[in-house]
Image 1 (cartoon, rainbow, N blue to C red):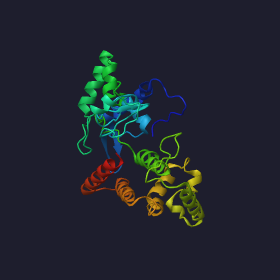
Image 2: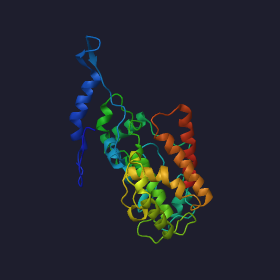
Image 3: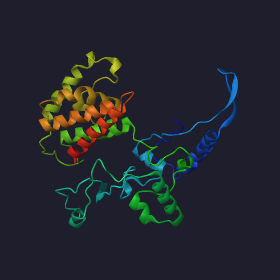
Image 4: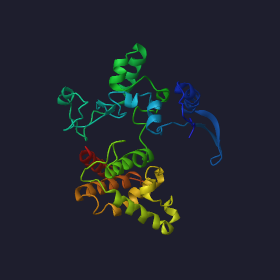
Length: 303
């Protein structure tokens, strides 16, 4: 970690903070001569390169100088276009029952996308669009592609836009996908709306039983497994990422059995199998293909 920006207000010009860092990183790219190697008893030129940049989703958008959810193409990795309904959502297929606030002609002309063959962004295209936007002030293009201009970090030789900015496990799984799944199951996915009546909704009484059962077993939960267990029904709005990890990987596969419809339960297990592989300390080429297949299956199920 090289910096921390506390809330509630973000800096208006993030590049002004990054510039001194990028300047030093360029020096490391070029090499620092006459560094002593104590093991070999000789001097060498030290070089270091940045390949990966980690941040939460809003932070990543700022570091990449992307518009994020204010752009029509808000995904930093592909050009899938979003449909506007208060916010922007990017469905891979046109919704069958779109909200009344979404214009029907927009849906009828909507493009369907294959989850395994998305129109991916490339480094050269992103740089070309960013340069065009900053040189011409073309806000229409900026909104269309979700790019506000060049990233300060793109001056580094090893930075690839967008491959150098992958989502990390904590923000992707434990603060995004998994909590959203549980909101669906609780019938509380839409904030402020009454409880949904979908077949995968689990009754409040069941959640209370699950919460009490979890809390009663806290004393026997090994400390080496991480955060202590809390009553899920009482604390589900305030769980830490580490708690969501334990709930998803260790407890939910047990508690959701016979509570979720069989089809939904199997899709959840499919997702958890993919997550297990994603967060392992090592992964093989074959396992990467397995992850891709399982996540594609989950995306198609979720859509």
